[in-house]
Image 1 (cartoon, rainbow, N blue to C red):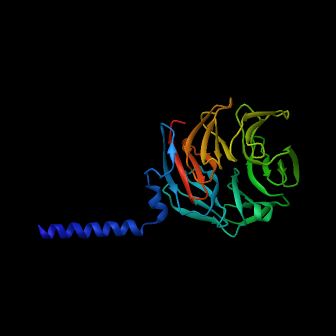
Image 2 (cartoon, rainbow, N blue to C red; image 1 turned 135 degrees about the horizontal axis):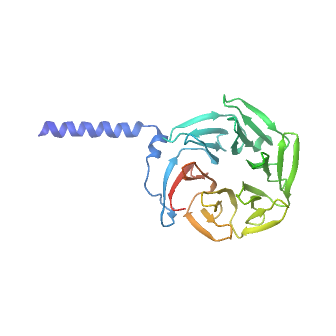
Image 3 (cartoon, rainbow, N blue to C red; image 1 turned 60 degrees about the vertical axis):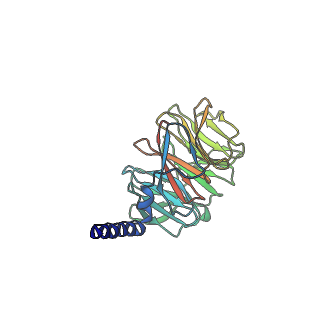
Length: 283
């Protein structure tokens, strides 16, 4: 009997040791417990997809189930595999804020500290793509293939057909998030007015939702609704195109840049908490 107890004790010690020395990203990928201070809407569940990140933002879902992340504080871009392993893509960046990709496997990163958009090749080579921007914060390719860039201090959204061919899409406020509904036009987060707007192809502006506390990042889900991170409110919102809103998560620490993957899972970055959450459920 004593021998059996001794064997069990040794087994427990080894199990605890293995858990302690496991890769941190792999540990948090299995964390399904609730986080103190965060409340979820009925039918919504969340897990920690990755932790121990340095100012994560600019989430980009990849076809292989991984999520690319701009680590603003660390000045690098990493990829988080579906198993939670963190792989570095590029480092030495200055204030990276958002990510986009093209059909050739190139990654585009807003490098605000160098007032540019950098392009990272599939082999990890970093080169300037667009320079001379005024505090860029967000970017996204529209259905026409133009690269749209939000200039925070320039208070405008610029559409680039190429690095040298540009047009001003809209100006007069600080934009911080872009999306493109199936019905056409462009969804833009307007931080100056604390609202989300729709810009029609003919230039008409319609307000979809107002009184949103610092909207940073917007994505359109499979439902066709908008999903917006309200940074100052600590909330992740679902907003219909008619303006009805639902709080999916509340109590977040500086949420930013929600994104959907191909399976319909929703991710959101918590910059101050250094983690990315993965949501499943009815949304």
